[in-house]
Amino acid sequence: MNEVDWESRYQNADTPWDKGECHPALTGLIHRFATNEAAIIVPGCGRGWDLLALAKEFPARVLIGVDLSLSAVLAARELCADFPNVQVHHADFFETTSWLGNYLVGAIWEHTCFCAIPPALRDDYAKSVSQLLPAGGILGGVFFTDMDDEKSGPPWNCQLDELKQRFAGSFAIEIGDGSHATFPSRQGEERVIVMTKI
Image (cartoon, rainbow, N blue to C red):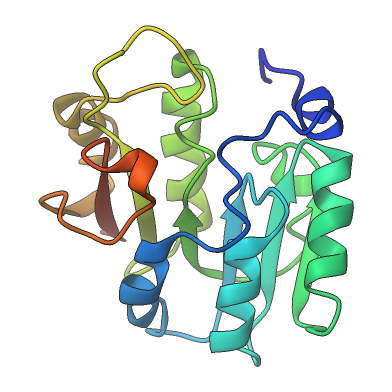
């Protein structure tokens, strides 16, 4: 599925996206995920910082992390070991039959998955999240839409017009103005975007 050897990146500590904490925007968005009691998915969960923040906020809900790197998955499992509601799977996000089980999904937190998949897979991502979420379900997170370099990656930039085109058929889209809390190195590169399944 991916052009990047994520396991090697983790083994070689070549993970500049991992800041050792959850994304600062998650705190301001977390209330948007409280609309139902179904599972919350974190694709490309990495070492689990966002999973941990969600688990603390929603200890009674199932939290499901998915990542292609076994090293990241093992780290996330250790980080979230005190939260039995957290599951972390070493799997391909697009292969839902291998990790989702029979859980109903209420929300998806997007942080470092959409920007890291090759751009050719963006329609597959949009289709997958649309199929996972029921009407009223939330896809919320941070998307790299304002980077200067649109050719290299990951992360790969996705202009707002393209993002809206890929998701508008299935989601009502709210786009932030870029003034959200973020890491200093990402100022001006990303937007908080919340999509509600139609």
